[in-house]
Length: 136
Image 1 (tube, rainbow, N blue to C red):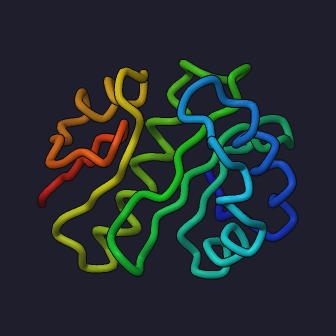
Image 2 (cartoon, rainbow, N blue to C red):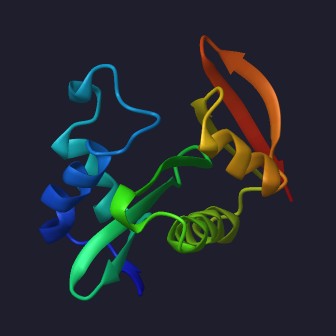
């Protein structure tokens, strides 16, 4: 079940973010509690809840048209949770009036394959990161 994230989800969101196998943060301090709380307050963050536990989350940034985060607990991968959360994040941005969405991810990851399969195109690189875009 997808629902809007609440402030009560912050700890679990960080747990998931810090247990993923790919796209790990080199510096975990780059993502702060304030960052997450801001996305929750702006209603761009959603979670997938299964049996009362948050197992994935996505965050759309309505300030710039980007997908800021999409992560699923490794124990719950390959069940369609990421796809559903991704579609919800995109819907937030389309509804906000964006005609061009963007995101970044590391090269050579399953995320890269996922975004390519979803029809997103690489438009630039930033170090080891690929910049993907989708145009309406």
